[in-house]
Image 1 (cartoon, rainbow, N blue to C red):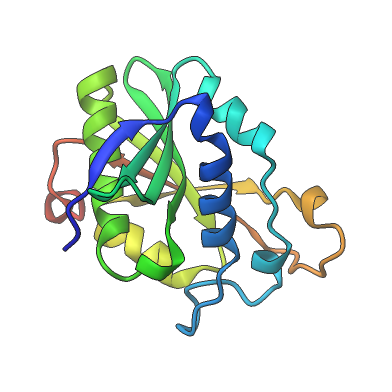
Image 2 (cartoon, rainbow, N blue to C red):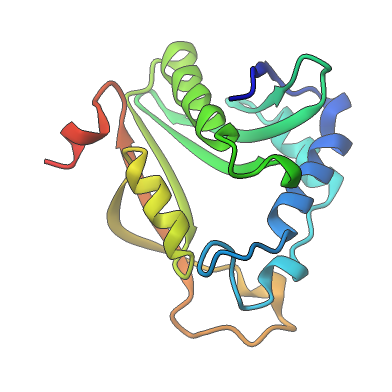
Length: 184
């Protein structure tokens, strides 16, 4: 398992984060159902200005995971929504390091960060409804589907023919409860 160092991203990190997230979201993976087969990954674009907005937004941080050589290996966005609730977004891992446990470490660090820094008790996140393996991965890490969905931003992918039922599946996790306890 890689030894990771974590820190909060600054404006100076925006270009590096943009490259990591865009490459991670655009990578192709041989595991069926892990990445999409709709062409979304090849059409995904993230502007550096969008990353700057995430980094500078009040009550929001992007957490960076680096190795001992200060190479960026993973990142995740966090946003405090109220006294007890925060959202996680855009979990990304360097494509050459995927499947090595970095995503799990970044997710766990983000959970701890939100709980210790903001005192929140519940985290929310979402993922594409067609990414069954990722849905399963979040479930194994204690996230439960809420039964709610959010419309997919089709306007960003107008050139693609997308299924009518494509949406974002909403998840929540109550912090401080082991995944096995949440399943009951």
